[in-house]
Image 1 (cartoon, rainbow, N blue to C red):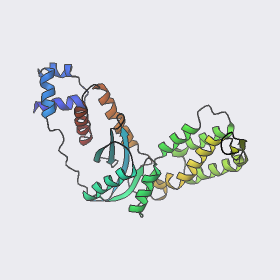
Image 2 (image 1 turned 90 degrees about the horizontal axis):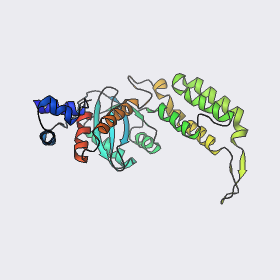
Image 3 (image 1 turned 90 degrees about the vertical axis):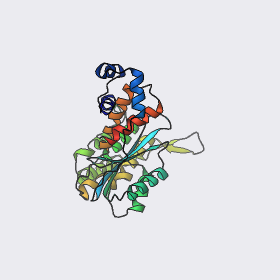
Image 4 (image 1 turned 180 degrees about the vertical axis):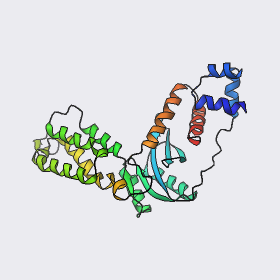
Amino acid sequence: MWIAKAYKDYTVHKQTYKELSEKYGKSHKTLRKHFDEFSSVTGELKLINKPVVLILDATFFGRGYGILLARTPEIVLLWEEIVSETVQVYSSFLDSLEAAEYTFSGFVIDGRRGVRKLLERRFPQIPIQFCQFHQIQIVKRYIPRKAQTEAARSLRRIALSLAKVSELEFINSLDAWHLKYEGFLNEKSPSEGRRKWCYTHGRLRSAYRSIRTNLPYLFTYQNKPVSGMPNTTNHCDGLFSHIKQKVLIHRGISKQRRKKMIDYMLENF
């Protein structure tokens, strides 16, 4: 059917209305009308008869409009429109996945503490992997590339090695760093606020504390090997980036058409 082919050209192959008009001999108005009427998404869930590694992540296409996505390293399982990324939203989303009779062998998440605690309560025996890329990004936010102190530069280098070393190597490096810079990390300065003092290197402390807090979940894929468990949520992040590029090409379309286009791409990836 030419409508299905044209819609795929519009969404997946990023062709414009002008290109589609020339290819199919239809006016812009006719194409829009057919696209609005075209039922491009079946809503059928992909049945899997074994436990899966579930990668959970969300992205936003502007304020108040986002997508929460559940997928395996191979296929998209389920997605849902969201206006905010809360623990309650994740809980309801997990309800939907369980209602569809999916079972899980592992989880990969972007690191939201509330989501991790939710998963630990609901699935206490299932291992959780914190996305190593997100951990590196957290450290980068606290410690810029041209940090002023050697302590900060050294901790940044350790964080950047996260995906390249074993857990033991990483912990040894982190422990050696802390032994060397513990005094520097605990330096205090007078404060003009309600407190009489504050830590001099607060951002560095925050970066270190983030790594220490998340450390039990950063090497799950090595310590509790689950078939196919990745160490990042890049399967979701890459898909989100791909979709946003296509949405940007067709910027200016209505919210309803944008939703339909996103649904189509997610169902066909």
